Amino acid sequence: MKTTPALISFLQLVETGGKFRPLAYDDRHPDRVLEPGDPVEGRLTYGSGLTTRPDGTPLQIGDEITPQEDLDRLHRYVREEVEPVIENLIHVPLWPEAYDAIGSVIFNFGAGEVSGWRLWRRINAGEPWSNVALEWVTGTFYDDGIPLLGLWRRRIMEVLMFFKLEWRVGANVGWESDVIKVLDQMGWEGDQPKPEPTTADLNMAQLEDLEDEAREIGAVVVREAAPEVAAKAAKVQVKGAKSPIPVEHIEYLDDEAKAEVKVKKIEDSQRGKGFAKKKVAEAAATISVGGLIAEQVGVIEPAVKFASNYSMNTIGIVLGITTLGSVGYYFYGKWQEQKGRDDADTLLG
Image (cartoon, rainbow, N blue to C red):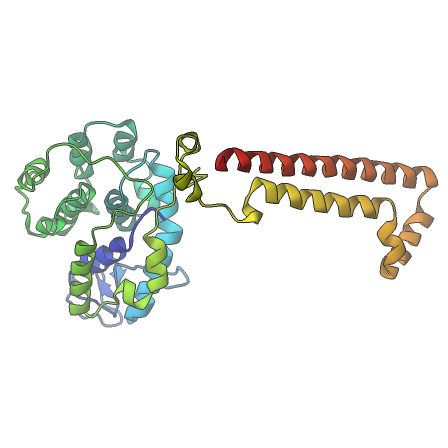
């Protein structure tokens, strides 16, 4: 996963406005208690900004959710709906806080709404970060054509998070605030630290503050309620990574450093895969020449029926093709096994 547990805590905070609401409410009038038949001006919402039931159907007045159910659904939604969209939209390496900020936008608007935004093209093209910040807040704080101060503040918080700055100040900005001036006031110098794709550069102090606030509003703390999920979410997967140390650098390591290079599990290595292919080929070759048919009484009858239904020429062709294919697969497996062994010898010196 590219996002971190901080995204879940952030969503719990900004979506609830600091107050967890288990009952479905009108997001235009969150403090109004709804009765069956009452008109709804906005969208029915409950928990941490969820607008549907677990089965995907729209919420109804009177629907309710528990904090644990809310947490489970948040995790599932981020994993199944947010993460794949990030993979599709962002084609350059970023830092964990950036992915969390992008994840918040996707959660807020939905994949269908954000897929065509210029924001992603600016990020992928490597445009100046000021362009990215301005694009982030351009036309993205409207709901059904109505500008909402809550959405404006959320966009500012996301931009601050994106640039690894104290995003909580965004909750206090007004309409007159300029996003670039806010960034400057927070010490932004117009650039961004280089991404660190091999580690989850999670600001633990920030996460702990979020968890304290979650406890105050009665929300579930991720690392306490789902420590295994939180641990997995904190790991950043690097596409295409084959070794903890780039292969081209291994030859320059001393003996002590080489000894620390982790050896893959046999089933994940080229040698292991080649060995497996060889064994499969050996079994296939044995079957093709009838060795196993003679040993396994259970397959004699089907073999007899097969022989009685086809001519000897057909049977001979089938056996010949099977044997040739198996022999070829056998030698391919032998080659893969040797290649894996050679690669391992090269890497480990």
